[in-house]
Image 1 (cartoon, helix red, strand yellow):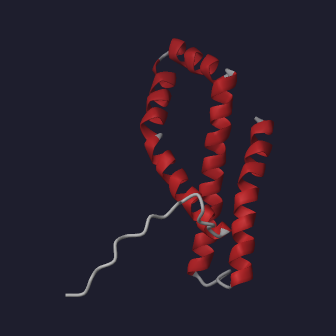
Image 2 (cartoon, rainbow, N blue to C red):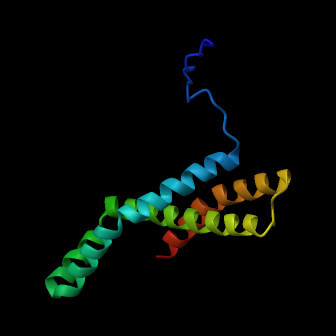
Length: 124
């Protein structure tokens, strides 16, 4: 019976992922965060539609600085997931599969999502 090798300890901080790998991890994390926030969103919607006091409470909550920052992060998560999802759909139809294209589109998604989130947040 051959001697089996023991698993090698990998230091995850030393592994250099390509930008497409980093973008893929963020895409998965953003999707998971959006799913986990569905119950909170439903609760806040229910509270705002229940009566005038609930609507006023949600309105005052949305005007605080901390909640504004959290909303900015959530907007970034939503836009990143949207842009990277469109990128993956284009890859599925064989658009942007070659090396320069997939690297360029990964950088574009990673940079465009926070910039457009800041732009939209500034408009709100």
